[in-house]
Image 1 (cartoon, rainbow, N blue to C red):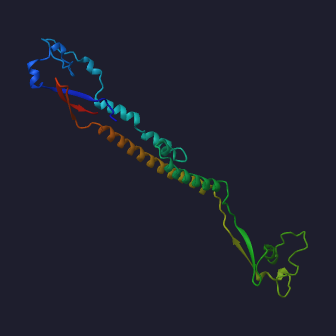
Image 2: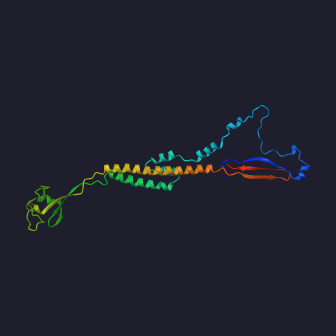
Length: 251
């Protein structure tokens, strides 16, 4: 479908066939001309000031382009919203927008979990016996001379059930070994880093992707508008008495 109306220009008239020469048609009965050309009558200049308000082809092309073009700035600006897929949604790429939305959801979820302490850890003591392996920590404490709860009946003078010779705890200290397991970890700092990296990474992905999509759309639109002017086609007409020939242009 053409963007602009069809223009027809008549440039010559065909002569009537030989029989018509014998009986020419009177001027007042002739059909109205298809095109009137302005001409200078005497010293007066032709008044064509009304043509100044007519838009030219470039202006009409720009009007059509501005109507259907997408805004690169708007696409990039929407991509700055956390989630980073809103620019792609504006560029009519809803399926593609799922990718930055998914990456953002995962990244923000992991970051928030770190900040809230879901992955925090702390060190702890472990006790091992030379013959029995891992045992409760209280055995190491008693064998080292410490009594974690002096009010109970268990102290380092009691018999050590892990000792083959049934000696008291204070005598079996060499058979026990205390070790520290785990690590102290506070996830707040790492969580903030993950949140920041997620925002920057997904925003760059969404903004670049949306910007390129908008650019491709606008370029295709511009080429479509520029290609609407077609080659002129000849037009012929003859009614048995008179005829004309011309060229028609589609814009």
